[in-house]
Image 1 (tube, rainbow, N blue to C red):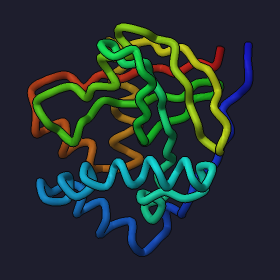
Image 2 (image 1 turned 120 degrees about the vertical axis):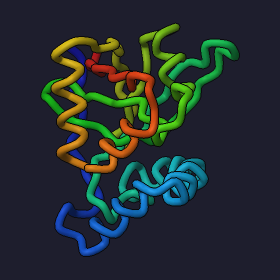
Image 3 (image 1 turned 180 degrees about the vertical axis):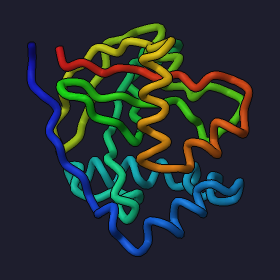
Image 4 (image 1 turned 60 degrees about the horizontal axis):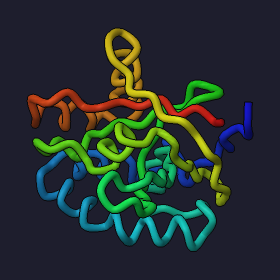
Length: 168
């Protein structure tokens, strides 16, 4: 097995900003605001070596996931919240409850080799799409961590894709 994913989280789950920010994220306007901030968050995470993120005040563990574009062949990076189950990390393609799957999920289906940055270091990983009881268990973990995932799930009929990221 290769390197393990570092365990670094900015912010705290006990932050007084957590509850109002999660509530905002559950609204259509809040989802739009977060989607709009994603490019800024990606740059902030890269510039600070994973030390700072716009999602920091909610204490959610955040990674930069880099995939290979299925059409362009170019590297594409997305900041995502994750669930840890050592030695693996799990990411969910919620896309804020929109009807379309996020592009990074299509990229992983086409090319499962990816890079995960949790603390300023890129670690190569392999992505596996989950289904059945394991997928349901991980979706439940996301919903326990940040309840807004229940809202996202209620906005769409599509099953949200969940991937296991395993260090290679």
